[in-house]
Image: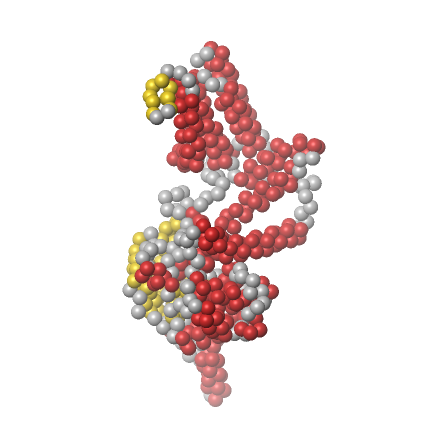
Length: 267
Length: 287
């Protein structure tokens, strides 16, 4: 059923990854992503994989759940691998129709897929260990310096927060309306394309009406509580950089030094 | 003929970290021509239960049959059996979408593939039953009506499909006292005149006392008690465990008795309660 979907994949826990400052996590993730593309030696990849696995275990998120975050990108991975397998020139190991598969292609494809997998896993680790609210707070804080050039940091963060807040509500609403209209004999599963599109009308109209009603009520409630933008607004949960974060930053620096040494030595 | 649930268990989000069993081994028979009330606390599983009655949810294990036909699956018999059960959700006015009242009420019958004469007949009938004047309201937008009227139009939209069984999920929630009384009167009239089997979900014991001829208490996904009202409203322990209250009439009689009035407490209908109190007062005066 529709309500069986989980949006945002925050997995509550108490690991050091959960307790880290969200801003530090975002910045470190960014550095890691850059590192994935810079340190492209086999030794570098081995170290990265070990690191990611270590972080995954330390986060307390079930590894199966973590692995499942790759699933939506399965096709892109397969496609990337095949393209490289067949298009990189080199020693031919197999032929199929007009395609020549090469050893070099296989190696290159494998590493590219590995990069993508690491990228997805590390980003998932961020969303698994950071509540959506902490994440938007972090984005707001990181965008704040750009306010002087006209980036509405607070407004963007508030919009994200509201959107995230209403995703489950609207999913529930959609589910309810769908069930109500199904009870009135709408059939979503059969018929041609036009019939199916027309079948959406009895769902979309009530859904829009309820979305507007909720938006109106929310605006009223915000105004009633004197909301007037981000100016001078304080936060209930203030982001604080603690010793955990300093340790994490230090560990990351050491890790990058090791990667650099590996790269220079050509391993 | 009846709706039967046999050992029905339902689990939400199976196989994830958020797995939750909402119904646990429920066996229940809803007899034809009865008006059964299903009462329970929020989260007791009553809404999940009624969604099984017309196949919106299929049991994780167990069977639901309507007039002897298993309603799971895609066979024609199963689909027809599901159609026998009309479902009015909580806040049904949120499902209105057409430009006019007439079109909205006609939506269900049209989906059934009926002729336009038959559709019009049913729309007129259904609107009549919920006390909305067809000629006056048919071309109005449902969104310009009051909350109580919108709800009655939405209920008419289900009635127009002329189901054999009707499920009403919290039909009086959020209505003003007058809207509530009108709606209850409408439901009772429909039940009497059409011999329609009604399954009423509610946590208002006062509403249930007014309508039901059978009461089912749900608690934590199980059936706690299944009894006629004369028994159910006086089963104090079960009512307490289900997180409900006795109807106000019963509470009043008990309070009066506690305060020394010699009154017969075995009553829950308003008229009957008044009669008993009056006779108790007369008796006291005469001594």
